[in-house]
Length: 453
Image 1 (cartoon, rainbow, N blue to C red):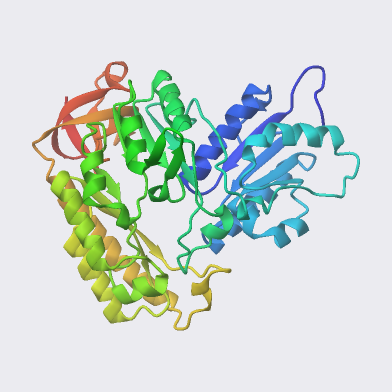
Image 2: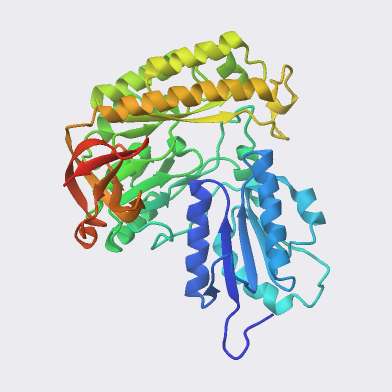
């Protein structure tokens, strides 16, 4: 396969996993498009398939393998490229997989164009040898891989900006430090440059993303910068009306941090603090570096500065050794915090982690019961949180037109990330991609609030 009669090969990309992966997939798409490759949907036949894999659970591993084989099945002559986190932790499996032609390490995605061109020029030299590009590089890498985006494939109003990679936490259930390597922070000036470029492209909201953004720290001759400085520079970029924080480590919530970010009016009062358990004994087995009491102090501090802040979290149920008493402690703590939304996960054994070898693994039926109990609690707390906005006037960034029960609505999000809809009535062109003040009237469904302009 090569350039034929001036036509470049077609490329289809598929993303699995987190927002960091999504950002990197968009960056690779832009690089390939700028290099002249034809970008086609993954459902179509393509000359080259790139799958950005995930490894957060064993199920994610399986989905990654399935997508790689699906690509080769769609076109047996296609070049199939595997990259992402599954690639980093499953080298032995990758080497045996005949569906994969090129393996690209997690920290060299910026070279995707050159990697493909080199393969196209030299692939006939040894067709039986799999091209492996720096699959182990991330384990020793200490520099941030610079990637950039100028547009978002999925959204027109909101863009993600990657500021950091890697994690040093080594929670006992998590494989990600082995897949992403140690903490690496992006050059501060490069973050500022990308924010300005995205603002020029019309994006009104930027979401800070990374594997562990709380650990952001960069120093050069002009000074030392932390996450609070990133929030300040992006939040004060002309054209950017909202800056939203990705998932935060609870210990970053200090008086100093809150004092600094609260001075930036464009900061969204939406804080995702990853809890995982409300029981100190469970947190200790998870190797989380805080207690439930310390977490709660952080929550109180957030509400001191942002009384109506949306505070969301992740919770794992059925972690090895979690007794009925420990689960009840978690449930009581969740009610005490009164989260606006929770993401509930049943613990899944992850090969390669310490938790996989722990005693007292919890049966699936108990995990399911505990998960259902917390899902019910989540529904109640979400409604309680949303109801506080009824009758209030609030700003919404409108994103798209959609349909409910045969009627058209325009939907968007508040700064707290509450989803709001107004009846379309041919107002789409007037308010889509704009921030408008509305009055909340009630609910359109369980998660979407109804408002009037």
